[in-house]
Length: 276
Image 1 (cartoon, helix red, strand yellow):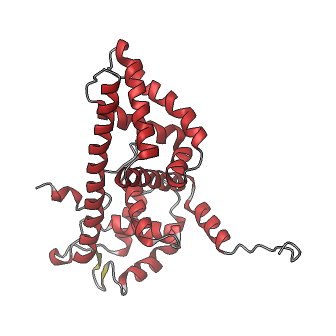
Image 2 (image 1 turned 30 degrees about the vertical axis):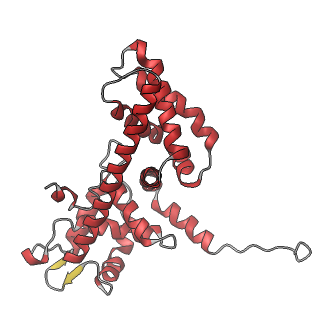
């Protein structure tokens, strides 16, 4: 009965809680996962923006969008220079319109998302929703066990846990994302984890006498999730980390990421033959 909420691009429950609309970063992460490690970030970015711009189009209902309308819609969704979009839009529209076709082009009237693409995008959101449900269930069980061990209770404990996770991304974003995805930077994460949990609990409605016990329970739960999480729990955190990385790259400039990926692709290492 709630299937309709997953029909729009980027309508995934796996989101980092930032002030701006997170859908672009979530959807970009989904497209990046599908494209694979060898894909160019600038191509994936422009493709994602095209899909978002074509949200709501339907060839069966005659709802189409002209090239100029696509560009105008994209410009309203991004917070950086549109020069990259201007340079690549026509090429990516053409690429997506040919086999294997992901958007449909009507020569006279414009572009739209075909049924197959809409089903594909919905499937990504539904997969994220299943992962979100598994994470909430698993993390809630872990937190209840930790609170029971501390012989304390707290109203809406799960909300506190999610607030801790979001604060980790806000304050230790790159370090935490790198730790989740590469298992690197453990010292930085461990150092900040205790401080962030204390800040979250201290401004919460938890009664003062229970705060120390709740902090210990949250710390134990976070460590349990990070170091001994199930595949679904780690997968959830990795998707959050990937979304944050997309947010970070777009806030700087997508061209920086493109530059380094191009540089790495052309890297040649010369080793003296005596070492060999």
